[in-house]
Length: 335
Image (cartoon, rainbow, N blue to C red; front, side, top):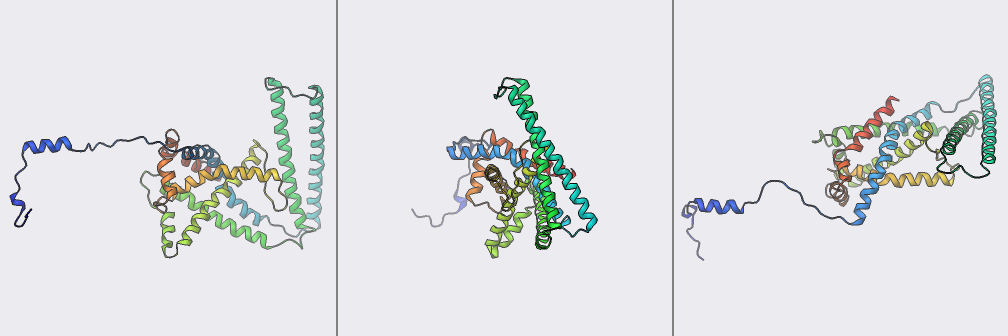
């Protein structure tokens, strides 16, 4: 069809009938929502992330405050040479504590044997309220005893490093702890600021860490390494927080990790804790670094599919866990 010489002036003015047709075919501008199904693996990931958040919000928050402080205190209380008077006083104090714990251990053993004889070698049963109360008291006493033994072992090791092992003690360990404590303090401060400035407001005040990671466009590997460091630090904070919480409140047995002195049960406990906190940490980092990871698959999974899941999504959209984590961090600092 020949369109030469055509201009807009040749168009007829739109009448009322034309406006009515356009009105009928206009798309409704009111926003709505549609429901989509997710596969079983995505739903299971959301379930495990939701369950793990209860542990991570508590232990991770405690660890963010406790990890830098413990590393710095390891330098402050580093082994030093003692004179004869200090050596004698420390040795006498350790000896008294050892004798006291031996006596307590013997009493616990006798009480357990007497209780076993009274019950005829059988437990009191789940429905026996008195037996359950005695079992809870016995468990608490045993945890207190294990806590005292652990603290005694720590002090005995420090005493050995100040005396017979003083010449063999590596002086670089406290310096390394100090450097690690300063770096951990900086990372913890950055995490707290990032939560306040980027994650909690409806409109982020500033991208903060996202801008820092994006600055490494000239060599992207550095940005990836920084994300890995900040993410791995959260897992280490969760392990430290679990240990500090268990040592203070005695709800469960502590499982410290030490070179050449770690039991297999402690390995399994800490690995299990890492696995439970892994998904919350990944989700937390995906939410914290949305600008940096906006075109990634992990952003699509955690910030879209899991973010709008029924029931679970409400907790994340309302940012319940982020508020709890920040509150526990502040309480731990005050404590």
